[in-house]
Length: 300
Image 1 (cartoon, rainbow, N blue to C red):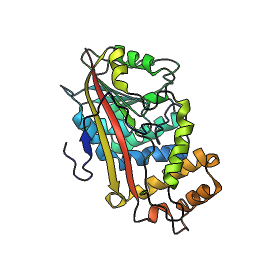
Image 2: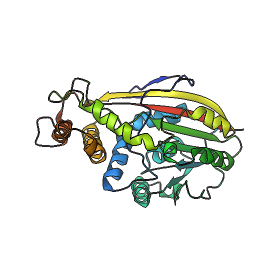
Image 3: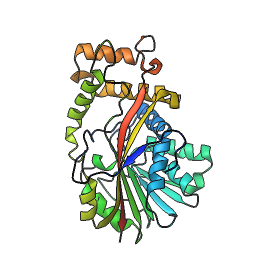
Image 4: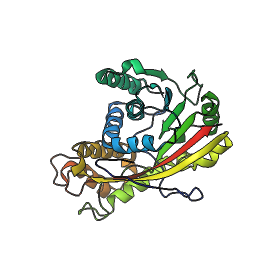
């Protein structure tokens, strides 16, 4: 893996253990949520974590360069454009339930001059499986755990793939953390309590934190690799980190405000207030910390 800036730590994942806090992801509610803030978070997620997405694609055990790729739960195209860049001969079909996400993806394809290599399909995977041809590679990032019946979707992916085709499943370890444990000074442990509230809200998603290896095997796949990628870098790496943290904390404020104490809400409001000395985008201790879990599987 050759990364110029972020140097992610990549390790084997023990498939018998459940990683802690592999729960509610922050920017990929492709099947349930939309809105301008959601589009902004997805775009920033793609920008800030681009090196990590590229590292996952580079690691995939593809024997030949895929020509036809499907991006399931594409959002605004974080995976789509990384795949197009890594596989210059490929075409990508981006599938999402949100027309807003797909519209933004198409705009970005035009801006980058790759619109002739991108097709968008609006589909609710819980309702009906779309016509996707016979792709060589299917990519699904932070989408499967939102589905009502992901096991059915895994079988559909298996049957859709060309023989020998690859399936990449990426899940996130919850919402990124942006502050050290001893911050903010006026409300220690705030981020821990916010994440706990997010996790309680996420309990209606029974497949969050799933070990997808056995599920892939049950669907007929041969699992060819598993990885955990630790994501950790400070704000100095990218000017986008401040905007990313701000957009993310605003989204959290919308999601869990009623579950927080008045003191925690006030402290969170200070973090997202540009006039406050606690303003997240101006903090010297701002960083991004999260994990990604990756499975690669092949159709026999």
